Length: 329
Image (cartoon, rainbow, N blue to C red; front, side, top):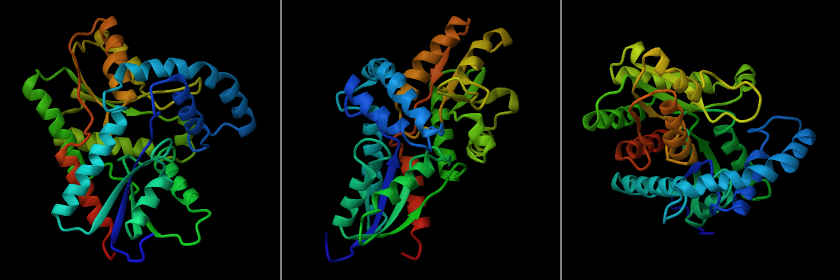
């Protein structure tokens, strides 16, 4: 490690992705992801048997095929998008004269949180700002990042100083970046009957127990609707990606799309503000699977609006967050 503290460090953290679109790699990734009590709160002994005896025997092969359908020459879209965000953020911070080093990490899989922190410390960073790539706070995502950070330091004798960005669900620059992606779509395609803002769901019991995630999503959706000057009849907020038999937050994205044609909604623009990088849940589930649901129910035009990825306005938002949260460092 360097003896000289040269800068603050920024650790951008996303969820994670398998290293390859293969059954084995997906199984390793799912085992780590689904073993986190933040993600699945079922009693551990019972969940161990469900996870290892059922889910990891059946699901990896199916999920691997889905990953294969979206994999690129450069790798996983989520990894490619997240790396581009980290590189662009470094460029913007350098341009602004900030003596700040940026590294990317994943809560699950590679590069790990421990690896990202180690790289920052090798660059002389004794103060590290952790920026989850989740605008809306949830115990299942942002709190899992915090857990991973402190777990990575459990055996360290010399622990750096940490700060965390908890939420930026209605940050003006984030909302404007989202709004402009919608406006750009409307410049090239007719505005649809309804704008669907689809957020990754969580089990309802998590919200009932105090997870503020639904309120966070509502903040984003309401702010975006105001920025686009949409009245209540022109947009809806839904939840996608439910898993297992328990009740999740509603309305469900797929069920909403299935019902739309019978309600007179014949065209849809759809986006997922919860995902800052395109990934399996956007490129396969939202762009393809849910389009098929809508079409088979009698729907017409269906336009998927991409995630922000390395959108310059979003990167500027991240830079603003870094400057705000490193005050005094």
